[in-house]
Length: 229
Image 1: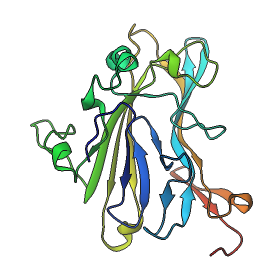
Image 2: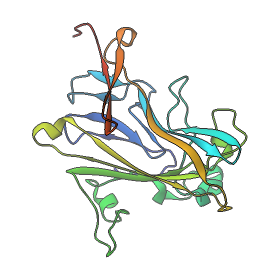
Image 3: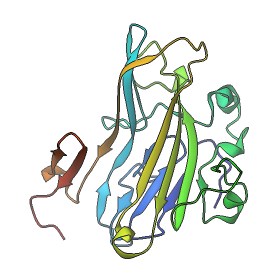
Image 4: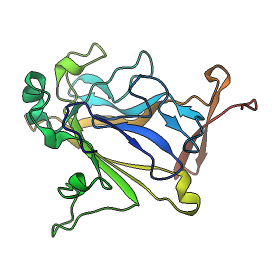
């Protein structure tokens, strides 16, 4: 159901991908801080222990990185909602319930669905969508020992279908905005990716790889060299 808490976690399972998603940049980790993505749904075959958005770049003379899931020791650096709400959230986590994770199949979330087009029509792409907004302006959220925050505001839109081959997929769309309050700093040499602790069953024997084709696309993957139950 639609939540009212600062750090909100929901399980998305409209199709065969069963996964936990939160409202501050992380996905694929359970409430118990264990593996939180399974396929096919109900099988208990875990594929992700935790994952999240990573952004790095140069701001002025500072090299900065911010993460939605730190794959070494867990942790994260984003705050739910816009940066203007950070001070309120630190005092009272219930202060801005609108900064939750919206799920299109939850009636109370769909009634106030925030993703709309230029004339106000709700944008829902799949059989189930989620939407949230988070930011990296809050110094007290920093895990890495940076002295300068990365002034980003991010919206994340996920969508999934329960049909054909698409029932085995979940799509993530990110919009990343430089919301430097001074309005003077351009982010240079920027890199964006997903930090993901991808465990297929036994985490001790997994391998990873990357396929590239003509600079047009890159496909990362994880595999287990041994057959597992």
